[in-house]
Amino acid sequence: MNENLYGVLTLFVSVCFILALKGLSSPKSARRGNLIGAAGAFIATDLVFFSPGMTHQHKWWILGAIFFGVIVGVPAARKIQMTQMPQLVALFNGVGGGAAALVAIVEYLKLGAGASTAEVVATVFTVIVGCVSFSGSVITFLKLQEIMTTRPVVFPGGRFVIAATLLGTLASAEWVIHSLGNTSLTVMAILALLFGVLFVLPVGGADVPIVISLLNAFTGLTVAASGYVLQSTLLIVAGTLVGASGTILTRLMAAAMGRSLFGTLFGAFTAKPQAAVEGGEVRSVKSSSPDDVAILLNYAQRVVIVPGFGLAVAQAQHTVRELADLLTAKGVDVAYGIHPVAGRMPGHMNVLLAEANVPYEQLVEMDEVNPTFPQTDVVLVVGANDVVNPAAKTTPGCPIYGMPILDVAEAGNVIFLKRSMRPGFAGIENELLYDPKTSLLFGDAKDSLTKVVSALKAL
Image 1 (spheres, rainbow, N blue to C red):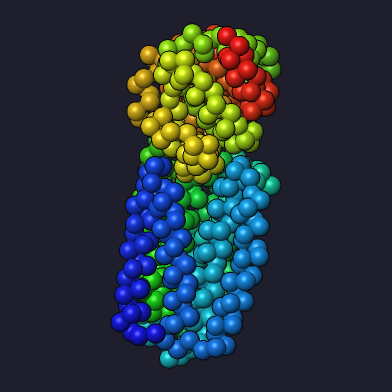
Image 2 (cartoon, rainbow, N blue to C red; image 1 turned 180 degrees about the horizontal axis):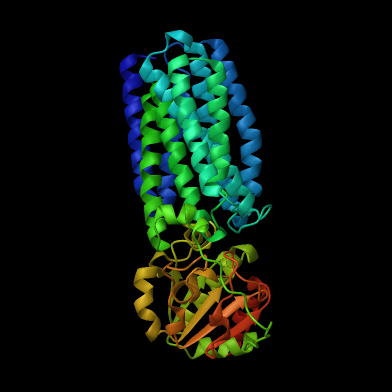
């Protein structure tokens, strides 16, 4: 391929990536942004075959890798449920970081003693951050899948073990730079993998979305660094965009949780244990029937729907859209209150509701919807718990204390759609469930909403 044409296409792909990121900044343009990014990635992959030094043997290896990725990735992406999307994202992110680390190791072995100091430093950075991203992402997957406990995993002296592992990783990095040996590289990679595990273990379930975003930023940085090692402008541009956007998103998510990033990652070591509930008192809650809920909604002037992970579990997004359309047709003002960390990953609820073609103007972020709750007649909480839990304001030491929440308690009536009285992902009880203005509609969210819709149509 002509060198000038190759440069023009590289610039075009870079612009596609930038436009894709811009499109993903809004639910209304996210679909278009995703398509632009996919088109850019497709062209970038094709350009690899025309890069300098590419041989037929290299092309066959690349085609084999692409084929393997397709037969594994396509079925997984098609069969995955929306409830498992965060786990899939965590795994894909980890694979990206691990791949960047492996590429850097291969290049390091190929360059050998002829590697420049800059190339060795870039390689060391890529291997460390890539390994941390890989092992950390595996732990987030295990937590999200509830294969391991979602609670923070701490042990005596944990902070010192983590600090010692980090210092050991940095010391081994210095060893690699000065020795250019394979043994030092292996030790560094193992310590980085261990640090990634220790880095994520103290994070509780409620904070996992922030860690996913942070590890995504790590992966972007490794891709950018590997782009320097491989002298690939596209990898540098793509990695820098992912790293920068992931860093910004991480800061926004930490702010949404009402704490510093350091507190999110290591707060479990300093958190004070909560007092146990004394006496084992069994408190009663007020339950409702679908007919009761339908009547309450029918005479409301404003209704806010708060979606949560339970909505995704029940795959009830289309049913809740039908309910909202029915209420709107009756003249009811309907909005969706979206908390930044609702679900299991950033933007989880936006993606879920977009699947049901919910109008974008009905999606209202937390800061905008909170002032409207005193004027709201009914709040319908569908499978959410932690993002509306008053303990975030009233219970110091609890996993979500300090996190801004949706102030649904200020509404006239609150209806929770829940399968049971089981706590949310953070593992703490919600006192709002026992409030006199709160009613609970037990059962599968989709089934319950279907009954409410039928009852509402009959009125």
